[in-house]
Each structure stands twice: as structure tokens, then as C-alpha cells.
Length: 345
Image 1 (cartoon, rainbow, N blue to C red):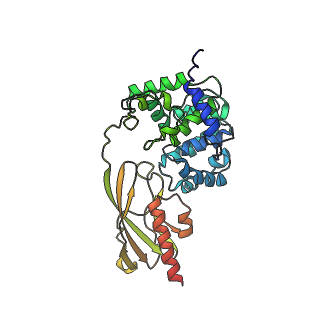
Image 2: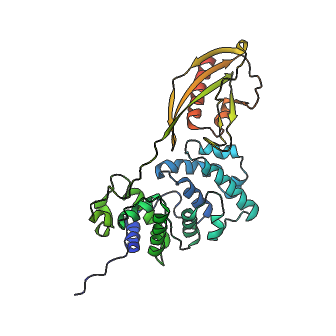
Image 3: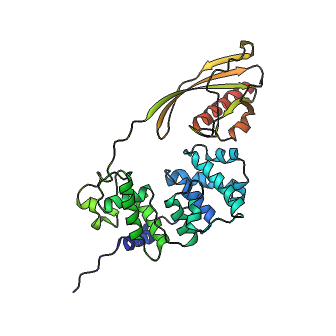
């Protein structure tokens, strides 16, 4: 009797996806490129469980490409507040306007056209083309890189250009001629839920019998973990100037931390002592970004009137909370709301 033919990686992944893969995510079972694009952008460096409520809220306000393109940037950033990596929201809004103006509101279906849109790289373009237009392009997000590295036993730094090229060659070679959408969804699901970064569930992995890292007993050593540069630290002072139900905010520059968001003044505005009703230091807040540990030191200053101050804007608190705010600033605004409510009793 002839030995059974070994199933290909694609066959194993497709069978897994049909049997055990996630089937009920909000962006599945659609070929609408707008819905797929939005999910792919939100899922960049962000877990599915975190993305789902943001995705649903975003679509409730911007259900179509046209509504997103016509939206104010502040409204887009407001819905993104807390999701992090705010450049994604800027790129999303800019790309929607390009599609409205240059493609007459029709999402481009050509892979090379997709690559020209802000915020869309090779892997994201491939996913959109596959899921929305039935194309056959490889993808290579972080989860899939890790899965390939383990399966093929790649014991090298995945961030180098040489290894990146090797991974893309593997991704292209392993793409099946049919059912490519099911295959890449299966890769994503396996990477996210089974071949996890830590505590991978090898016992329930359909690839376990052919996984090179498992055979070498190096699942926890692959992928190779290059020594990362230690996160820097920075201390920021926040001044919460408020009067009645108004608060003073300043828009951040379009580059740097919290680009384009509204935030609190970061220096004492030297307001006349005759206008200061109360002034108190609040407990420090510790907030971590991808590359930076922040220590935020807020001071709350109640004024007797809301005087105009250069390069800042007074907002009613309700209007302020509707803006794009960094999460720690939003939390401070919510605390201020409690103080205001107490004073009104």
C-alpha cells in the first residue's frame, strides 16, 4: 500500500479554517472593500477583542466610504481615541478622501492602486484584494511571520531585509490556486489563536507534525528575539484650566506623540493670579506608548472667567469629550466632569 501523500501547508490551513477557524467576526462574510479595509487597518498591531467595539462604533457613525471622506478629522480621531497608533486614523481619513476625489468614490480593486493609498502596505493590500475582490496575493502580518518562522524553522531576526525577503518568497510559494481567502484567513487565525507569541497551543495545531520548530524543540526560541532598545521615558506636565463647564485645550502638531489630537496645555500659561480661583496638583499618571513610558503630572486650575489665550481654544466639556483626545487626557476630562457635577449640586 502506498503511503498517504503529505498534505500541503495550504491544505492543512484551509481544513483547519473550515473546521475550527473564526467565522463570526464583524468583518467576515462580506466583500465590501470599505468594511474589509477598515478592519485590516484597525487590526494592525491590535488584538481582535480590542478592535471589535471600535469597529462597530466607527461604522455606526461612518457607514460608508463617502461619510468617512466627508467627515471632520476631529470626529474621526474622536472615535479612534484609545485605540492607539493614531497615524492609522490620519491615513484612513486621507485615503478615504483620495478615493472620493480620484476614484469617484469607488474603492480601487487593482493591487498596485491599493499600494498607493496612505497606510496600506503590501500585506494589507493583499488582504483587501483577496477578501474583497477574490484575488490571489500573499499576506505577511506579524502573526503569519511568526507562524512561518516556526513551521519552516527560521532561526534568524525576522526584522532584517534578508529574512523579510525569504518570508515573502515562502508566502508567495505557499499560496494555493483556489480558496486563497480561506487560506489567508486561516493563517491569520492560527497565528492569533494557536501559534501565539507566548504559550502557543501546539497540541491543537494542525501543523504540529510538520513544524520544524517543534521538531527542534525550539518553539519558544523561534522567532528569534532581537534585543530591543529599552523604552525611553518622558515626563509631561498637564494644566487643566477650566471655568464653569468649559475647559482649555490645544491641538497637537501633525507629527509626534498624539499627532493631531486635542490635548491639555503642557506649560503654565502664567495667568494672572486674580483670575485663579483654585489650583491643585493631581496624582501623577503613568501611561505607556509603544516606544515610551510617560509620566503625566496634571495640575487643575479653576479660573474666574474663560479668557482668550493664544494658540488654545475653550470648549464646553461635552464638546471637548467629543474631540479626538489621548486616552489619559480623556480620563482627566471625565474626572473634571465629576468635579463640575459636584459643584452644581
